[in-house]
Image (tube, rainbow, N blue to C red; front, side, top):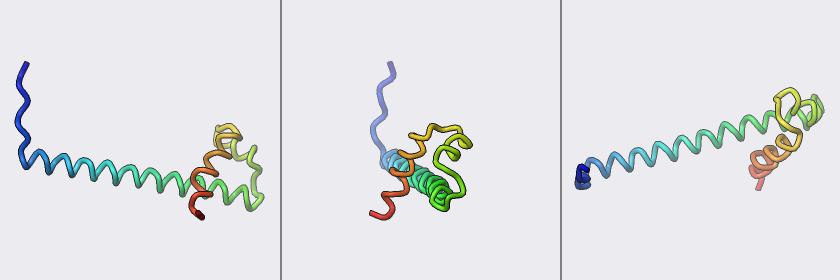
Length: 78
């Protein structure tokens, strides 16, 4: 088995950049979820669709839609 190379300053900096990239990705995914579920919630709130109709159209269960709206939309106002 090949011995591990010692940690270099370049490797440490690269790891920090990768950690930052992962954090940026996670924040972007969270923002996308919030925007998506806010749009779903807005349509339901405007009474354009019922929660059941939105769930059927999006191919989710009604319970999943309810939980995602609670998770991503309700927490924005807290």
